[in-house]
Image (cartoon, rainbow, N blue to C red; front, side, top):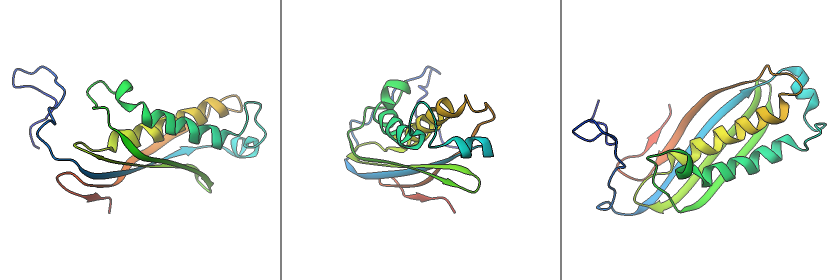
Length: 153
């Protein structure tokens, strides 16, 4: 494993210095799954708080935009695009986010934050039906730009 860039030689934490890096187009896609019961599935579209899927999508976008406010050592990144997609399938609710920027550092954390924020918003919307909800499988699917590209196989 390589040396951790957020840890100084004396063991203290630090924000990584990216001032010497070149800007490039960077993109990251993250996905996650909210496991739900049939009760939750039946309630979607009938909730007193409104349209859970749309509200979670908007919350995910807001969360991704606020990533550096939430993750202490994350650089503020000027997002040029942030998409959050949410849909039901046979296993639950699938959440995915793609973040894009032209900057000196990547947007993986923004995409992660968008997915998790959308997921916990869905939990907030659905917990009144039943608290039996599991946000799981949050993972990086792909990233481009920076030192190297990466794709989940």
